[in-house]
Length: 258
Ligand SMILES: C[S@@+](CC[C@H](N)C(=O)[O-])C[C@H]1O[C@@H](n2cnc3c(N)ncnc32)[C@H](O)[C@@H]1O
Image (tube, rainbow, N blue to C red; front, side, top):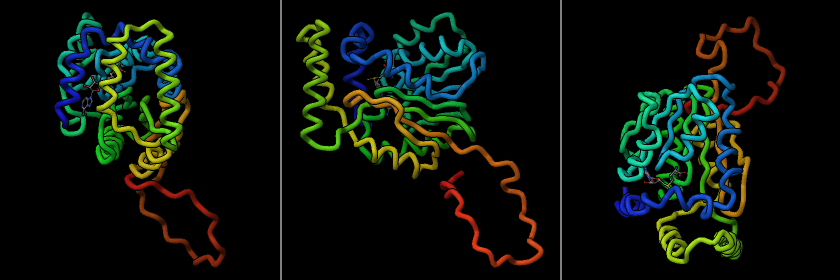
């Protein structure tokens, strides 16, 4: 993992939470879309892994939606995680906070859901594909992976337009120019990939029900489900008494690893 990302977020940690709503004008809808995509009943006690959890902004929302959830927060930046520790002080072992590189270190599991917000876009594309496979492996069958992230527009002109519109909205929030400049400098660490490519990588990792459910400019929420184990799958097939000559109806393709 590139030490630049860790250094950048260690440095950003002190002012991170204060600036979030200004830097993400769609903040509430964006994070809420992650919760909404998880088909977890109210009152349940899901086990959820948060990749690149930072100061725990997303994790906190998940805990207010599912107060009995058990969360594992991983992040490269010790300084970001220190803020998460302050946020969740008193939660005991309901929230486990671990410094880790989610591409290299064990993820644990199986989880009911794996989520991530604004983190995976720091990985080069092979890393994105690898973390999608790792998230799949860490989920129980039927569990969901949801990524709220920055994605690349379909053309360079659109990407430039999205960035200009985003900066204009951020300026409207009254943010200081120094703080905006620091955020823009951090975008040099971004390795954005087009959304259709990422949806394809999710399918290739084995996910089904893959889709994007929220998008504003380069902010997108997308994900998929690890297919549930079908009842009777794996049981030896009984030979049919007579070979049928009728053509078989088309069946859905089974993703690898399901
Ligand atoms: C923009 S912050 C997002 C934090 C939080 N998810 C949120 O929505 O506020 C991105 C975080 O991803 C972390 N990160 C980036 N690559 C990582 C990796 N390979 N393993 C663990 N954490 C990583 C960074 O350290 C940083 O804290």
